[in-house]
Length: 132
Image 1: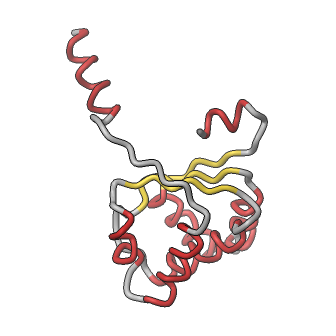
Image 2 (image 1 turned 90 degrees about the horizontal axis):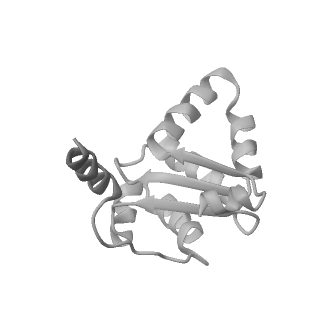
């Protein structure tokens, strides 16, 4: 979907969630935080990959809510995760009010695509082994 959006001339940003939150923490420390949030809000398609690898901290929850609120109704966001949606509340963490607000923005007007089958990385690994 991201490649198609690029081919159609749309602005796209692909972000692995763990690295995005690391970058946001650094940006908060050196004064770039607001600029980074503004940049993420402007992109037409934001892809958040590897969602749910670890439970979010309080600052990560706030950053995510700000990010989603800035984009809500204005731009598209894709979230990829191996964690089932019914477990996302736990991934967001200890603040039920923030978790509800974040999930409301994530799942409201969402189109869910459940993928099945083998991992593409696993298939590619098998093909590489077979080629040797």
